[in-house]
Length: 211
Image (cartoon, rainbow, N blue to C red; front, side, top):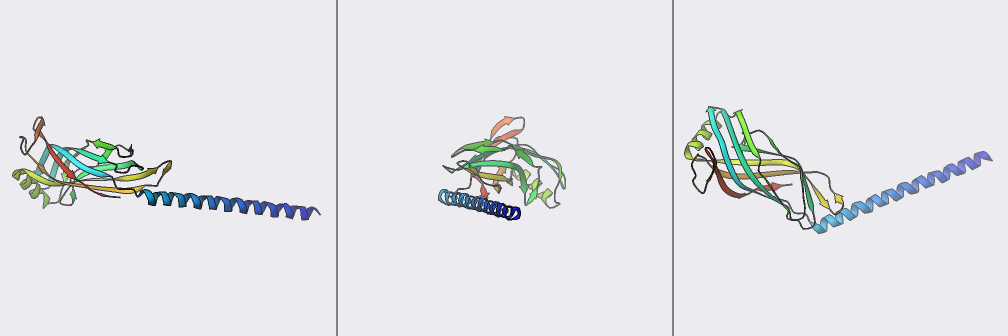
């Protein structure tokens, strides 16, 4: 008799566990479905980035393939979404010349960007005695003599989207701001003196953004 009671209780317990598991799976499915529907309706847009200006404090090729520089940039970032917030995280900015990195990574602090909000960062990108490809040394020297250089300022990081109380997982963010940067220690082409031998140039260059 006791064996029958035990087996009966075990059967009830198994049914209860199965019902709980089924209920949890249904809830999870409905929650994910709701998120996907909301996501499809809102259609999040990529943030917009603009390279507003640059100030070059140092730009020096000291040997055929050794380069040092210090550049302050001003980056404008705008969230175009009216119902979606953006978390920026693990962002680094650096400069490239002819597909070669010529500065160290500079970290941009993590930040939350609300609906239609704008953030402006002014990070320094710099490098001291950076080894560069032998063919890039003469190119940088020639550009310096000609009074300007084409550089790519790149930002790599991660973003998360926030819809109401729901926050997504991380997505990779890649930003490229290509600009012709004037060189020299005298104002020209709209440059403004900001210190000893340093000139700030307004660029207002739209950046390509990939998420």
